[in-house]
Each structure stands twice: as structure tokens, then as C-alpha cells.
Amino acid sequence: DTAVSQTPKYLVTQMGNDKSIKCEQNLGHDTMYWYKQDSKKFLKIMFSYNNKELIINETVPNRFSPKSPDKAHLNLHINSLELGDSAVYFCASSAIAGGGHGYTFGSGTRLTVV
Amino acid sequence: AQSVTQLDSHVSVSEGTPVLLRCNYSSSYSPSLFWYVQHPNKGLQLLLKYTSAATLVKGINGFEAEFKKSETSFHLTKPSAHMSDAAEYFCVVSGSGNTGKLIFGQGTTLQVKP
Figure 1: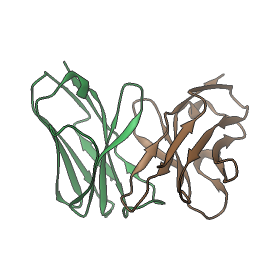
Figure 2: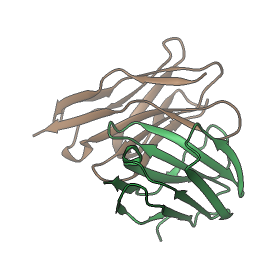
Figure 3: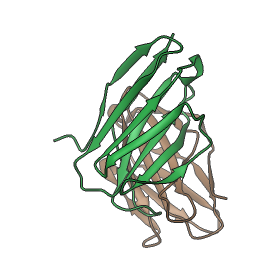
């Protein structure tokens, strides 16, 4: 019944590794997002997909690559992990892209790079 | 460009007393504004949203916010704090265009003392 689900919830990995985070929504929304929350709890958008098409690509290192196989899924792959990548990553979805529509957020993936 | 400033990084109230969390925004057009709450180690939950309808917006759990264009403010209030209100609160403005991008404030930590 979870509207936006992310896996895994926790991820601890060594520097240099490659890892993926998966996100799925069962709300029928067209738009999905990845946000990063840093250690000071600041949230910033990374990517957004609307019906499988990339519409937002903020200034994010190209080690981060999102993939949307269909509009219900948005995965995030990270290559060559660095210590600074440690953060909480939130997936979210909204009915349509555009202001005025709140998001539904997943519960987050806490990534720790050691 | 759109931005939000949360005027207090930390607010402490006693249980049963009123809550006021302050937010100012900057937007070159009529914005959509939101308040989200994040409980410890949890995802983000939408409390309420303003989308150019009534300026006084009622949300969940007894929270409300008033949009004041002349003051560019969107403060969050609750008449009587409950222990379960202790959390991080984010004021959010929608970005320009039809991307659905949300711009988050820095967050306000609400502490509720017994």
C-alpha cells in the first residue's frame, strides 16, 4: 500500500563502489523526482522525470545517473562513490509537473560512504 | 528566481502553547507555497499548500498558514502544540516553469517541551 517506496532504506558502502537506489510509486503519477538531503537537512532537487522523459537535471556530478524504465519507476545509479555523497536521498512523485501540486515523498535512503 | 527563507532555525515551545514558524518567500510571479514536516528518520509529509485560492490555508493536524503577499510571508501556526509536533518543518516554494521543481527553505526544528 506504500505510495512511494524506496529501496534500500539504508546503504553503507566503501568509497569507489557503484550502487543503485530504486524507487517505485503506485499513485499513477506522471512525474518523479530525486532529492538529496545533506547533513544540515537541506533538500535540493537532483533530477526529475515526466513520463520517462528527463525534465530537470540540476548541477549534479555525472557519476549520478537516473533511469526511468516506466513512469512508475525512477532509479538512481551512482558510480565511484565519494565520501561527500553521504546523504539521505528522497524519491518523490507528483500528479503532473508544475507548481501547485504537492509531492508524495518516499521514506528516504540513507547512504553512508566510508 | 524563487527562494524561501525560514527565519528561525530552531523554535522551542511548551506543550499546549501556540506555535509560529516563520517563512518569507521571493518569487517573480504568483507562487505556490507549501509546508512539509519531517519527523526524525522519516520522509516528508505535506502539511498544507497555497495555490492562489484562499489566503488562509488549513492543513492537517491543526496547522494553518496565511499567505500575505504584501509581506511576502507564509507563516505556519498552530493554536496549541502537542508533543507529537516535534519535528523539522520546511517551507517550500514552487520553481518557475512547468517542471514541478520545489525549492526548500533551510528548515526549522520545532522542539515541544512537556
